[in-house]
Length: 472
Image 1 (cartoon, one colour):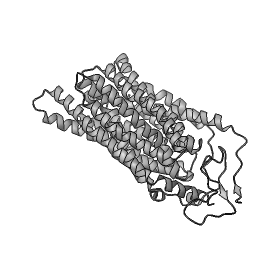
Image 2 (cartoon, helix red, strand yellow):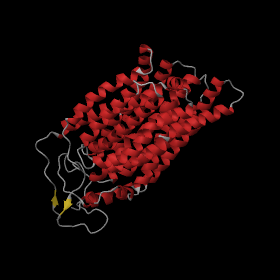
Image 3 (cartoon, one colour):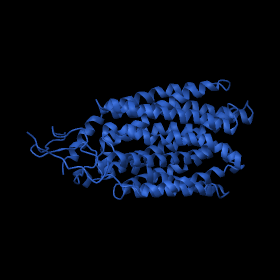
Image 4 (cartoon, rainbow, N blue to C red):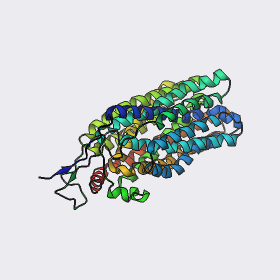
């Protein structure tokens, strides 16, 4: 009979209470993260008028923070694997809050551009460290639900921005006011984050060591289980941890499909987030407050329902097979593509068609987002998760998050320029609506392909990770 050696859990902490408090703070910070990101999207037409720029330039402006975030997220993820993650999270939140305020103070376009770059650096520090923290709060079969609660900051923060930013700008008579107001709560949350007590790295991973049956092959032995060793378990440094590097992360086959999926999803999500309000203003004739509110319904409510359902569904299927969680996300992304096309192809007199079908498409995209971080945690060891998430975020943001607004903006200007039979305002509306109708569905299809590819390798990659983690 094999003898299993499992470290005793900590007796000085209450894991469930601590997990809830930390997730709550991370959720609040993530809400502010997406609130701050959404401010320029809500006010894009006003910003274009203030600085005299076109859609392509506005797309570049929207992508500025994403590009910088992508360039800095890998080293910051690497840093979060080596110092306290709460330190990285807290400083990231402080930095992006301060630079959000800077965007509302100065009148120079380049200073405003630079403020968005600063926001990108702060947010790059946040995502990998937060994802690594969450992985140590819950075992794999509960991570999608925990990640869903965390990711609720996305739709709720975005929805709040769309419902409030336009009204604040109108009330204060300036599009700059929302930038200043949004910075205050970020500083408060950062102070609270600095005071949390971190869980131990690898605390909830499913690694039990069989003393009588040492590992000799690539796969796990019968003593390697898929259940947690305890919320406070202490793990010895592993072989994988000692050799941790970006290149070792890229040797995991599932990472390539995950990167493709993240890039495709972010292309679609950032294109919608950046240009939906301008489409509603130009093509459907809504004023700023009304257009922002409709965007809030599509992105906020659709995203909220999608994350709650997505976390519950993908965790249930993961109990039988982690590959099924990936397949569910892939199918949802695939179905999201035609729904997005139907919504974005609606004529200017059928606003309800846009709202219904684009909201459903966005909802299904959230199923993928609920599963994304847990899937990375399923195939990457505890000591490398921040670095792995940094790799996924970096490449996905460069190709997708930055590419979506830039490509759609450039297509919009090109289609508008070719519509010589229309007035300038009608051509601008036609160009942006056509660009969105083409680009967003294609991006969802690319994301679905990435997850289908991942579904073929995730099981074997997880087995190899567990086997490596069991070797001290």
